[in-house]
Length: 110
Image 1 (tube, rainbow, N blue to C red):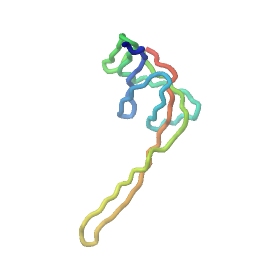
Image 2 (image 1 turned 90 degrees about the horizontal axis):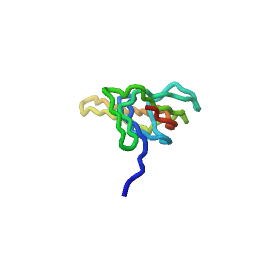
Image 3 (image 1 turned 45 degrees about the vertical axis):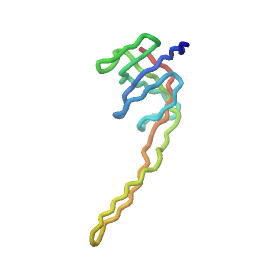
Image 4 (image 1 turned 60 degrees about the horizontal axis):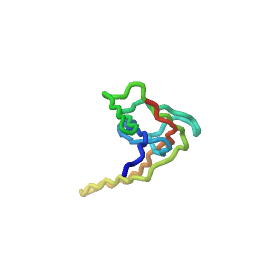
């Protein structure tokens, strides 16, 4: 029982790490790219192709992940509520929706 080897990479962007393979869709922090544009993410920490694994120190030299921008989206709404239980209390409610870029991985080089 052997699984078919899939080439994947672990990339770092915006303080987070993502495991991606060709054809994957994922959201990263908003980039100033137009829909349909191409981006190249070169902060690749690991590339695995079956039994062959390349680990970077800290990045894999010459490796990059090519992506296509599909759309600009907003994340779910987060509500921050502050309440102080005092005379003349302070109550504040704030909402926030983070902006993201939805991208599709087209190729993993390296």
